[in-house]
Amino acid sequence: MTNPSVFALLVPHPDDTLAALAYALYKQHEIETYAAIVAQTGRPPTPDDVENFERAATTPVCLAMYQKQADSFMTAFLDATLDAKRAKIQAEFTNTAIGRQLAAIQAELRARRGPLGLLRDVGANLGVNVLTILLIAALVFGYRLLDDGLDRLSLRTGVTQHKPPSSVDDAAQN
Image 1 (cartoon, rainbow, N blue to C red):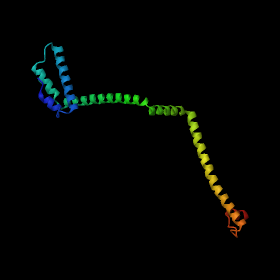
Image 2 (image 1 turned 45 degrees about the horizontal axis):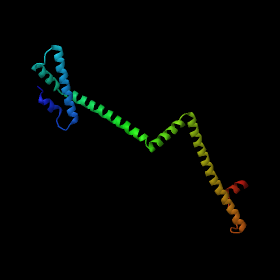
Image 3 (image 1 turned 45 degrees about the vertical axis):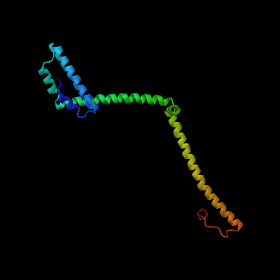
Image 4 (image 1 turned 90 degrees about the vertical axis):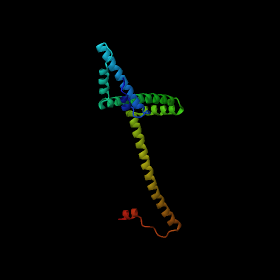
């Protein structure tokens, strides 16, 4: 009773699992349709009923519907399988030393969140910036002081006979 062309239309390659699922959906639709005919009429489907069903089921719209349903079922199956696998891997990972360390780090980060944690982090960053500026200023002014000290030392020891012009001294004299 089954039109062999339905299988050929839905399953072009024998290794195509998605196409085989589409054919299974066609068979499920066929069984449900014949059961509805029996329930409504009290008799098994006639050859005309079977021919009408197969004609309707092999339209491009129906074939596309079977394929879309198969794709939806396969996607839902794969999503559920991957979610279960992800949960299993995550549960196994949390039991490892690295997982426990990661959980401790995440807990510490959660504890830092909020207004107090934000203020603490901003304060720490500002402190580091101020210390960096002070260090740079100390290096610049320290170098200048060292240079002036070395100039004075060279004058006192006689290494240099004349005092080099200084922009600070010149500005003070004018």
